Length: 122
Image 1 (tube, rainbow, N blue to C red):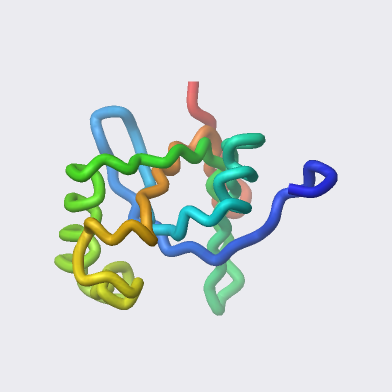
Image 2: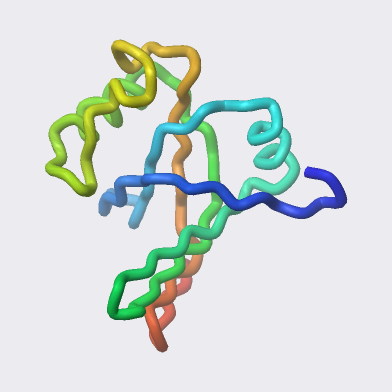
């Protein structure tokens, strides 16, 4: 994170309502650069756009969640969810959720905006 400037990455989270609120989770490769970026600034911004130019932005705290149960749960969720939200997690290169080249990144939004509306966490 040279000069403290973040990098953009394409990610594919699944969002769920939980007892703690809305949570996004995704698989990602824990590269040294990504680990350093999130250690220095554990926040990300996820934006969504559609062909009608509708836009949504989720400003989130990002945390690695690398326990076996979290990995298995997300692996099974992606595999069981119909496309385009879900996908076969084997496309990531591993045979199962234990693949050391991937980890789970948990996104906890503190602000979500859609067009002219915005929601902020307390």
